[in-house]
Image (tube, rainbow, N blue to C red):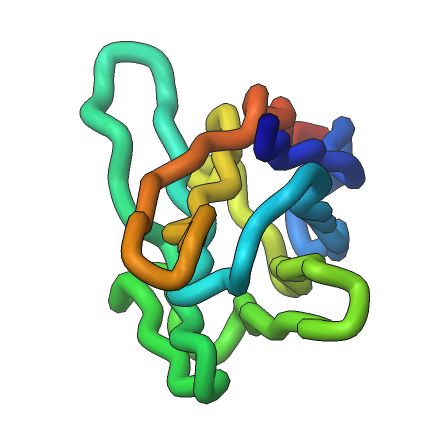
Length: 120
């Protein structure tokens, strides 16, 4: 069974930084694209940042220049470095990974979510 386990959320003041981590565990062939989504109360879940297996990245406009997504393939882990945090970044952040469970079968997995609160 594949699992994604997130860590690193918390309470931070505006202008502060946090680093989220998401590690994949279990039995699988390879990890393809990975990403971070967020969902604030009353809002739809949105893609914040994505990274391909070749480390190409993309970001939602509102976080460009402040957030950085990266991955460590040896550790099956994706990170989200969040700098210059704003109150509007407050949300539950979810890790997502597209994983080849065999050489022919791909499935999408979600982490459990981690709360990020930006407030003074």
